[in-house]
Image (tube, rainbow, N blue to C red; front, top):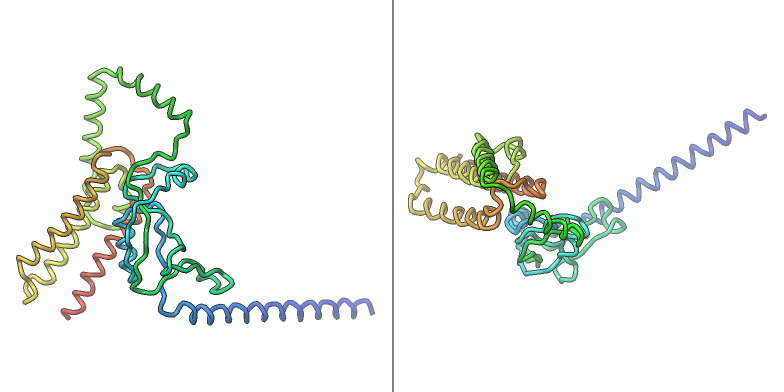
Length: 276
């Protein structure tokens, strides 16, 4: 009798678990269907937080969105996240604009996030100045004291540092534009060198594809190169001053370079298909 009761309890438990599992499955299926309906014609807005304007532009372009950059002050966010905010880096997307809407898990399940209609223009705030959010008032005072002390360094020491930095910059000579090579950058000079290498690789592939076709026009080709050279000059204005200093927020810069390389590769891949 006792054994029979145990079996009945186990059977009832299994039925309950089965019912709960089926209910959860139905709920998930309903969320998936709802997401397909609600998000039809919309695209998820890429993350912008502490990314450069160039990176945001490339990522927005890849999903069919257009950024409109406006100056914003988010020094407090840099303090809270304890990071160095660079001039030109962007803030989080604000949902206080008509084209942006946040969908939560109750509406679209795992696809929750900020969305906008494809082709929409999204306002993105960016910093117009550098701000060191890693420091507090005490550390600032300590830095001032440290600066006074360091100013007494001998010219020989300075020359040794300069020589070391020069050797460091000469050491980075990318042979390709692979993920591994991009991730190996250590300094701001490395970043600029890698950025230039990605552009050079793109034009090498692009020219080899159209060189012997009717599409090739030397004047147009050179004009296009000027546009990318101008983009590189903007990067230099932003980062060249930091020279061989170690990268702050390296992951963000690496992600941008990989995204930039991929967006250019998409152009040459599509061109190659059209020429087949």
